[in-house]
Image 1 (tube, rainbow, N blue to C red):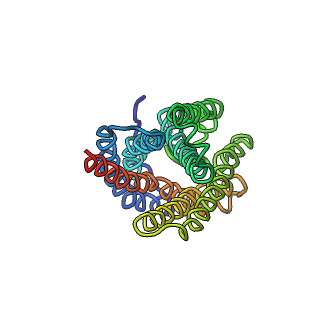
Image 2: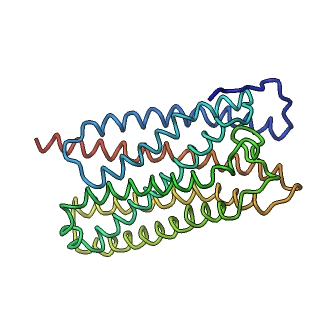
Image 3: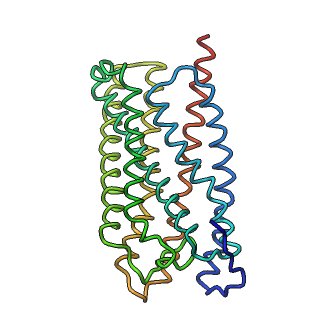
Amino acid sequence: MMVDFNCSAVRSQTDAAISLFERVAYPPVFIVGLSFNITALYLFCRIKRWTDTHIYMLNLLVADLLAIVFLPFRILEAFCQIKPTILCTFLLCTQYSNMYCSMFTITAISVHRFISVRFPFLTKSLVSKSKAIAITKCIVIWIIIAVICASNYRDLMPDNLDGCYDLNLTRKLRKTFLLLLEILGYLIPVVIIIFCSTQTVYILIRSLQHVEGRDRAERKKITAIIAANMFTFIVCFTPVHIGLLLQYLSDENGKNFIHVFLDVAEWIATTNCCLDAIGYYFLLKRIHKGENSSN
């Protein structure tokens, strides 16, 4: 797959503003995301006792790393336009695949956390199978994403693109593809995450009256982390799905607004790679310190 540049292309005022935004906004995401994800990967390699939580986190790390690795193409496109080719189709498929893998994995983590708190005896009875269950879930996530991508890649072919990363706003996504992204990709996960997170927080807050000291402080910290994770998910992934819906519903008059909105929304979604990395980087550091102190 060859990269075909069109550096002499004349950009509209809107495109020029978007390119300037991308030149400023994406390099910090790449630098911070790559640094934290590589550090987290190093910490993963030093884990002595793996749990199901580690498996989910590793799957999330793989998705985030793949998104970060291909981010230089997006940065390069901001400086010199890349002509829409099959490479762009691959890059867009990779971008959407990594985003939805992150979303599905975060959903699986939320469900796992809720079940652990709500049904502790059930969790203990399945502890011997928990790692196998986590691995199976992660494999199923990637299979679902691969099937969706393979079935709908035509919507991301060069003929449907205005630029390497820009959907042609006058050629709508097929309704079936849009519904898959909006319902299966976003609505179902966000409802599950909100339900599981709020229920888990509620259970933990109720349990505070029965504990004191260090255990109480730890549960408060976990409650704050769960609430922050839910808020981060909503903030990062809601705008891009609103943008896709507006792109499908809009006409020619709203083209410039949708173009800007989608571009900013995609950047917001990409920042989740950094936020994920920061979260499990510090969590893994705490786990690693705990392992060292117990030796």
